[in-house]
Length: 58
Image (cartoon, rainbow, N blue to C red; front, side, top):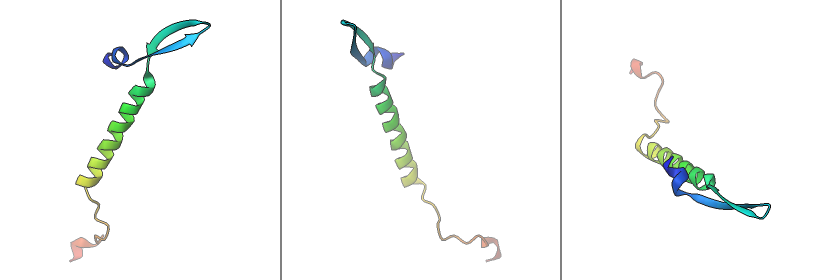
């Protein structure tokens, strides 16, 4: 995928270095986007805390 090609890191094992995808950076970006969506939904859709459950009687 595009993220695997863009974010790379080097791992040294048994004296040989290998370039592998940096999944830590990909997870950071994903968690940041999820947190942003949660904040936006929270700000745009306030909860009606004190609304009466018997509104139809009023």
